Amino acid sequence: MTPISRSIFRSRPILRSVRSAMIAGSAALALAAASAGAAWAAGTLRIGMTASDIPLTTGQTDQGGEGQRVMGYTLYNALIEWDLSSADKAATLIPSLATSWDIDPTDQTKWTFKLRDGVKFHDGSRFDANAVVWNLDKLLKSDAPQFDKRQSAQGKSRIPAVASYKVIDPLTVEIVTKT
Image 1: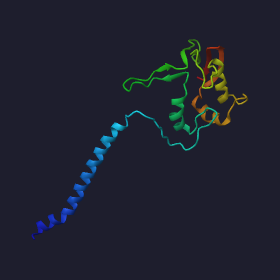
Image 2: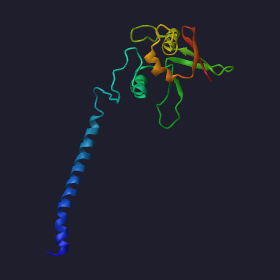
Image 3: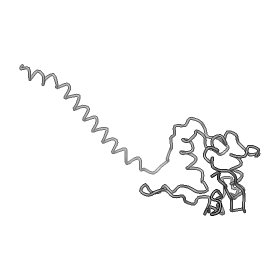
Image 4: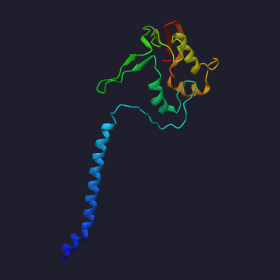
């Protein structure tokens, strides 16, 4: 054998390894392509998250930002929400539990929210301005009977600008911000 034929002969195991890797890679791509169709099949959606604890039974999601992102935003409605329906335009605020809101032109810290009528909680109780104030007291007013120290520790950080709030009428609530 010549030195060149010896080097080719010696490289055949390498060629076989490269060929095997290419075949395995092609098979993996084909399997991934075939599996992609199954992802769109109808059935049960299961959501996995990196949190390891059971959510609180008092209504507040736990596990910090991850719990809020995965559970809070999908299970609970806010007064207003960000419209994230389009990736190619800036997000705007849209109604949710509040049908409209106004900022006082003479005091831009004063927000008035008109609430959606006919909304019920899971237990059948009515959503109204008293429910908004009750829930804000649960997070922000330490002497309120429903104040929840653990829930406040997580929820208060999400609404640091709230200075005060009050019921105007059954379907109107006023929230005053710090700035």
